[in-house]
Amino acid sequence: MNWKKLQNGSDIRGVVLDGIEGEYVNLTQEVIETIARSFVRWLRNTLVNETPIIAIGTDCRLSGKSIKGYFVKGAVEAGANVVDCGLASTPAMFMTTITEQVKASASVMVTASHLPYNRNGLKFFTSKGGLDSKDIASILAIAENGNYTYNGAEGCYTTFDFMTVYSRHIADYICKGVNAYDYSHPLKGMHIIVDVGNGNGGFFEKILSSLGANTEGSQFLEPDGHFPNHIPNPENPEAMASVCKAVEDCNADLGVIFDTDVDRSAIIGRNGQPINRNSLIALISTVILEEHPGSTIVTDSVTSDGLAEFISQKGGKHHRFRRGYKNVINEGIRLNGMGEECWLAIETSGHAALRENHFLDDGAYLAAKLIIYAAKLFSQEKQLHEIIATLKQPKESKEIRIKLTAPDFKAYGAKVLENVKSKVVEVPGWTLVEPNYEGLRVSCGNADDDGWWLLRMSLHDPVMPLNIESNVKGGVAIIESKLKLLGIL
Image (cartoon, rainbow, N blue to C red):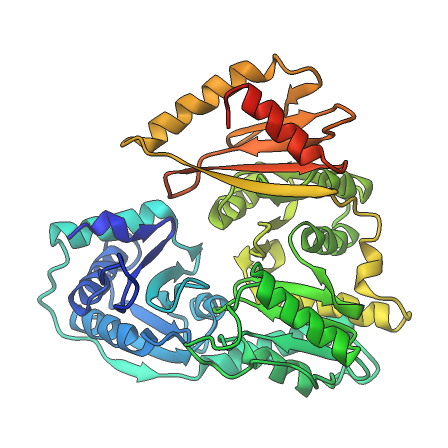
């Protein structure tokens, strides 16, 4: 068994169902039970000596119920008390570790986010937040070495409807944030479309409806692991097109779309205008900088120059870091620890973590915060998309994924980056961007290219993504041709 192959950064992911050629089941019952026992051992080694309390929830994937059952069996046999929260969101599972009703030692979410139906995985939390990659490596090392033996009494199994508690938490947050004359119905008069793609986010529509919003036209709210309508993923073009059309057709004030386990979201403005990626970062940055002037906004490495300029114009400091939502979140936490005020760490994929919310990447909390802002604008007859009207959008953008075939692809990729770096100085108008925390970022200052490109290593795969943006029509092709002349493409 190749235990290391199950690690996907700060998560565990694998294949659980047959059906796709070339993919073989590696998350079996035995493997899941062993991971559960290893997690309990890790908890005893690092956090608690007493009996651990582990809360567990799952998304609506076809394999979710069985995977959860295997994990519960392993954890209970290893002496943990398990609280089954049923269908849940990933952020809600973290909240079980800090909410008095559960106060779990740790929690587990059975999910593989937006990956294909035949996959599943596990996300782990303690009251300090999501586990890091080194923690996952430690748990898998325990599994591989068989160091999870337990000879004591079994734990117990109970169930608890935590999503009701979590939903009340979000509803109260919106009520307090809007603070309307009708306190319990702060969204009265607003028309908001919710699209969860048959994932786990249907609870959010119920929250908005209970607060007075008109949610007519909301779609795909029922959990269905087949995802029959579109992939629950704000970055999926088909999914975004679907919710944008729904907002436009209903003449709604705004829309919200979530991924499967609700740790990511995006917003749709009036007339079906998508507010995601750089636009979403610009919007939430505006809100944060009004509340915390001059603070730092941490993003991943592929954000645009226009966004950096926008944040600067709003009085903030843009700190562009590495890809990977945990990298971005941890950098925000680190900056605060160093005395640099940071209230937002956000990746272009929609993972947004706010300091006010435990630096938890919670798609529902992000949507709630933006809905609060939208409600205040609504009372002034203004719309969300107006707030980011000055954000400069590139004329063109493109991502090229360069496959690496070398056995040690990471070492090979590092050599490629060094070689490319030495050649950049040969191109007139091109300059290296510093500081830079991932790969190689180059600013293109010529009239015919006017943009930037970033070459980096993929976080997990033998691939080097090349992102290119240009502010002039035809600029991406010009940048590509110059890279080809240097032998980079």
